[in-house]
Image (tube, rainbow, N blue to C red):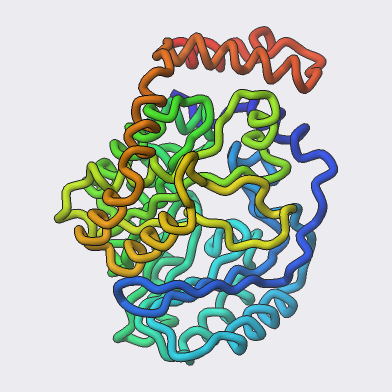
Length: 377
């Protein structure tokens, strides 16, 4: 099966018309994980290269603009100076891929590595797409950090189902490329984190859960050291946002995340992390709708999820299961009432609806006959 989806690329181009440029030069957040304090530094770049080609259906880092190496490096330096040190785990991530030399040129990348090398921490993480990982860049990443420091790469796997990756997400790269990136990283002693999304569009809630669980196991069996589960937010200027407006998408429930943790083997929990199960932004232009729950107090569930984030323990999962069992059981019954349909025909009909809603000036079935044939296989 081919990996790129020209229909979704065209759709994303229309959805992102009028998208405002990113304003914040950097963003810092702090959480607690089993190792201690985790800090993430995000910095603005000229933008994700895949975003420029259409991007993923749920993603919106914002409209990038040309920025100089010096400007990027200066913002990362300012962000690091604002952090309360020491830190146990530090992620420094651009608006796409750290190892993409179009987004983060070599001069900026090396300067950032050097700044990080001078800081007191145990684990240094970067985020990058699998197609940007090479032996040369992996070796460079390790060489630029102190010998005793652990180094990690976080990669957006999202789903292990090639059909879902292509037709629901528009991932644009193959599972073979993910496996290749993992092999390269492990050859250089780099820890691999695989990001798995929960709430993939065009799937029912039950299908979303099953796909996430299947992908977690696939990642662990294909070289990932850890898996990070991401419940999807609805962000402006994404296809997810339009699908929500058209009653074609329901916000992700936190009960889905609890269900995933419930069904995992307890021995795997130390390798399972969760992220972005709550909204860290006060600006509604960043996130329109965050994952939530119906008929239950979200603050208690968020607090319990915070505990799991900090511990990744069986006890923290049991605490989650004690919260509002009646509401959770009702949610489970509700999602099981959604009829199961043939996903291929349903997807073709969804693409028809999207074309009509966006007033596309061509018929996608006629313009992309190979795409339709692959979809219906």
